[in-house]
Length: 268
Length: 161
Image (spheres, rainbow over the protein chains, first blue to last red):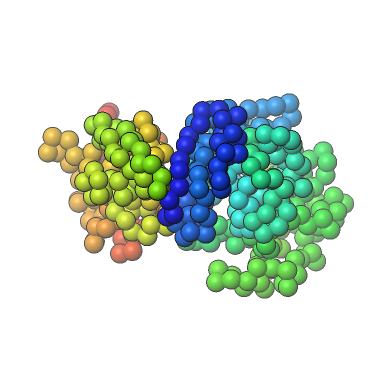
């Protein structure tokens, strides 16, 4: 790992100040992606600003009809929190299937979505539940947050503070995971709420996206059979050693069908 | 070069100080500076779990934690399990149930299983497999590893009953 300076500020303002003073600073959340990336020298920051000392960034609360989760809240905490199980059980289930128990003990919501790995799970929940991402300077609609392959709407030095997930009437996340890493080969998050149906797909393409044509069809008729006939073209899918593009394209339909079926059967 | 920092934490109940560059991984401090060579380096890419230690009551892969992140933490490694010459129930279980072949993954397995049994003292086989998913055994000895954890669960629950 390349040499860097490390600091652990106790307040958000101090973290932002440290970032501004750094030559090439990076915020460190749980480190479950950033540290491996730094080992490969794919990231070589001059300064790491550890956010673990800022207690305001951690925690889960109900805010009106939404669930608010602090950026530094670990996957393990989201997976086990009673508030999450009560409000959005599909979100607890999603958090509980990220990586493995050790990774979930360190990895955080904010770190995951800021990284926007094409095979990460949380982006599917942010897009699939119409969440709002709050930062140190503004709020960003979930639909506008993920902009491309490992790209987000975050500006230089912008720090996620929390994410608000509206409580959906029903939701389900179905994932076909890579057995070694736990990453989603394909994951589909379906929610059904007052604003209609949402279908968000992760793992299949370079960036999470919503299947709006399928959403429209499911708004008319919410049955597993409706999913057939909608697909993500093979040409748009990722093709790597884990799965071919054709396989991923097929899996999207399978996972979406399972998610809709689980919701109609009341098994969430 | 970034300035070295002194990091203080509790290691198996004893206060330790270690001087490290910020980039040093916890597994390297444990093995090379603190002579705790129980936690192993298997993959160093946070896949295998051979380096599993317990930090503040949570199983963690010490190849994916910086030592500087451990200031004031409570760290438990396999060296902390035996008490007064007596093996911990998990160590005994791995012996009795032949829960290891080459033994390379065993320190991580036992450290992980310890936290699992703290959180769930009588897990089902399915639960053991789910909650041990971060630890790999390349001798493919999972069957007996599950039995070893069950052995320890039974022993610990009968001891506390």
